[in-house]
Length: 253
Image (tube, rainbow, N blue to C red):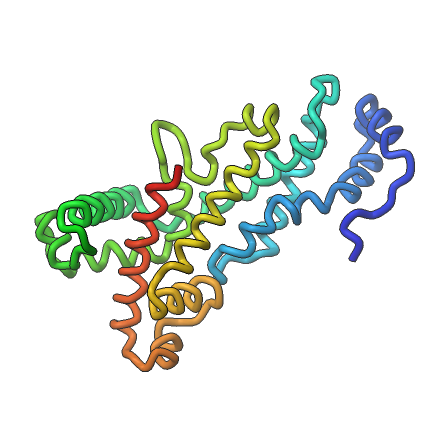
């Protein structure tokens, strides 16, 4: 499929659509710029866990493209491509946020576990054990394990967690910056590159488990068969890897 279909006189179509809002011309413009959806969502589609429907995500990206066509104001001097990339990514992220499986209580627990992990790691100069984290939080190992396992199911959504007051990690570049500073678009991509490098630095078993679970969609049982360990052990391996990755991501910029 040609992602950038040839349309003659695209400037004329834009000029006419800006005046008439003709749905036929809107459809032509949408077809012409459909490739922007692939560009905007390309990296997201690569890193998302396999249980998320890619076609659904792309559909929301198309919605973002159509919104961009409706709201674009060429007289402001901003290239449509820059404006559309922001809208497409925003629509897709709104969809992903709606899938966040964690309750507020669980999300708060996840943050507390991460804070305890980082505090103890700094104090001890090594990775803390689950027992040490539990003691720091005055909780049982079972409770801490449960929180981590709940967080595991939402790990990639946690990239959306608040980085500061009202600011999101993947959505932290404010729309005005995206519109008037196209280079700021790269900031989100840089974060995903950083995540990829953090995964590569994990010990072999942890790296393999994370890859198979999130990217390949294997079950804990299937991963256990590959690693020749039981399911509970696979769960522990993935949980520990997530703690390391979250700690790494907290240092990003």
